[in-house]
Image (cartoon, rainbow, N blue to C red; front, side):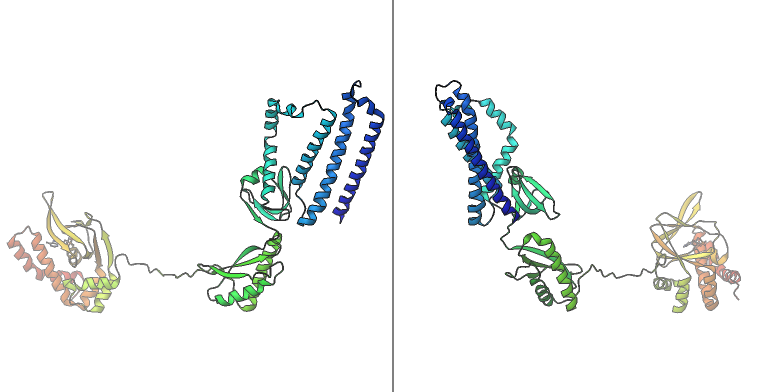
Length: 475
Ligand code: CMP
């Protein structure tokens, strides 16, 4: 209402001003008309006030015509306000034409065209100075010619994605009111270079809102419930039914989107929020559940590994050792539990000749070499592999180690101590005898290959047995 009455006042002022200027013209002509006549002294100078008054009258007339055309005729026919730029161009063109006519009628001899066209420098200066302004001006004209949007439309423009309602297009810029109620001016020349997303005011523009439900919820039920909840929400168009569809089967949710059409796109923020609210209540009433990130974690308990292998494997290995073959399964398991595993790298020394020793070893994996030192050089005596044992001589006799034992390759051995062997001897009296034989044979072999000495060593085994029994406190 206020805008209408101010327009009316404007027109009244224009009419009144035009009447005043017309009166001034009449009076000027009445009193000074003679002085402007051809041949009168200084006639050209006297014409200047007349030209100015006529130009003023022409300007007021053009403004009146502008108001009549655009404020009334255009509005009534098109239903919206005429763009400011178009109105200004109209005023400029008509006024310039009228001014030329007025000027020519007073100064017939002056060639106006030559005045502008002969001055090239003038043209260049004007061109450079108005480069940006003219760019904006012509971009503005082309925007109006294309009519890609009009006042009231929502547009997204520029690299910064300025979004808002178009308030107007001036000589220089497009004026947008953002949803934070700020005014953004995008210059016409920039707007002409950028992509502009237009959501026309009289168009059914769509929006998409996302949500997620649990995998246990029925998709068909979700579609029905959500669609019905949203379709009658405020500003959601009733002309097109909202579409609810699955957009992804995600890690911990069924991801949905709802597409709906708005009556007034400029209010899409409020409507999006309302749609989300409607969905929340609808899901709650229907026993459907929003998804939240979930992850199933299966914990694997790690049992601390025995240094080398499990007890069963060790018992298996020991049962393959010839001196332990008479042992029962239970005895083997007890012995296995009493062993300690060690791993040696190739070339490492497991036993050094001359050292004290109170345990023996079974080769679990790999190979070792037994060697004695003669004249400062190592002499290999034997190679022992899986299931063989060594170190028994010092363990059962209490004497120092008789030879060096080195790993040929990566080797795992099982160490059996004095206490474990003592338990075995108590329940297996024959064990001491079979070990005494092995020791006797090995001693013989150590005795530099001499057959006689070897024979003597074997015969010695009877004496060896009694010393083992004594050492272990056996009867
Ligand atoms: P011990 O003397 O305790 O330490 C060195 C080990 O080498 C010894 O026990 C035997 O087990 C082993 N050994 C010595 N001579 C031989 C041989 N001729 N054959 C196999 N093994 C041997």
